[in-house]
Length: 454
Ligand code: PHE
Image 1 (cartoon, helix red, strand yellow):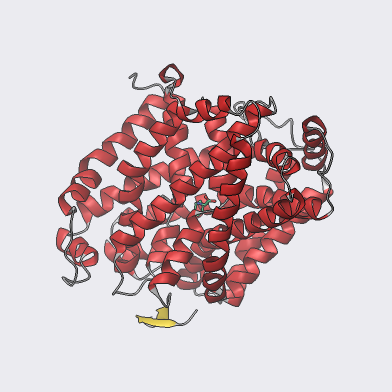
Image 2 (cartoon, helix red, strand yellow):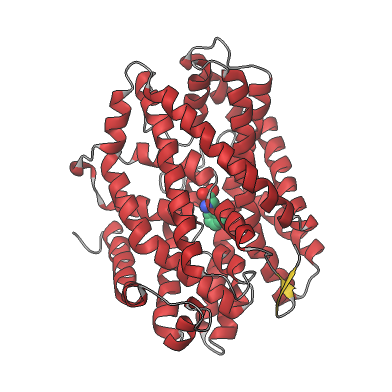
């Protein structure tokens, strides 16, 4: 990464680099692994509608608010709040974000490890000629094991830490430029194959035909959590990246473009997966293993499936790493700037700590599988707490901060690049972050814990 002259801090070099890095953070396992299984668990079409509404009404404004805080604050997420609101306790948002970062990194590395195993399996042509039952069995056997899931998790964490250490963000910018369009192209081909399977219609109906009787308080909370997770918002990843963005860039366009790209990719993943789920008679609500059964089944039915499978899992792992570095960066930027520890030490310490939690998460699919906390496994608890509680709560406080605590003139200054840009839609943005978003998030929370009944 080279210097862009923001208080002498590291920064992104070009508009394109910023877009790639931010989109790289947003687009990841959240779109291709988490989105389909959460849609599946929450009844399909109605969930999708609510999800899209949340992206537009809450997601984009929260992302823009994070960019404003980050670029204005020129600090890590904790330091930014301390600088922008000295002597007030808003830095708590930063502390919550760092806690969320550890939890997410822990379970993210479990799942990313699974994708590494699936690169090897696809290289070895392991899916060829297997029935969808035996593919399901293959996955079960792998992820309920101990050695390999842990091995791949460690490898993935080392990759993440190595990229953060080497500071090769510029390299990532370069690769993301070529590879992400590839991922989209491949998903498109898989979607076509999936839709043309016999029995695929049921999947499209499941995804696009809303059944409003499915909507419960839990579905709203799940959609909110998924929207925040997928956009990387609510924990300061975008604040941290925002602090590396130089003054000339248009924050509003970045927030809009990244959110749109992220959402389109999630929907595309849904279109690739659900028709096949129905065609192969699988259960859409089966949970986190969903894509690891369904995708190999699709590749099997494709001409050239061997190559498509290899390329796809490699791209998925890359998409995962460009997200996980943004999570680790939240912690590392904090440790470096606030605790004055070298970047190298900070990275090694943070990655090791996250890995320590991550091991429990991986083992919750095997030897710790019977640890049950409120009906959830360790994986379930980490995911629920981070995605459905900490991220939306962080988002709630972030919009309140930008809407009520920061001076309107400062916010406008960031949005307009000190008057150089004409800011459109400011009053809509202001109204959403001041009133709509805080009220909406609060209602969803209260509703889901049963305090409010709507
Ligand atoms: N948005 C990333 C994904 O979809 C995950 C992520 C969550 C990254 C929170 C940063 C912060 O895979």
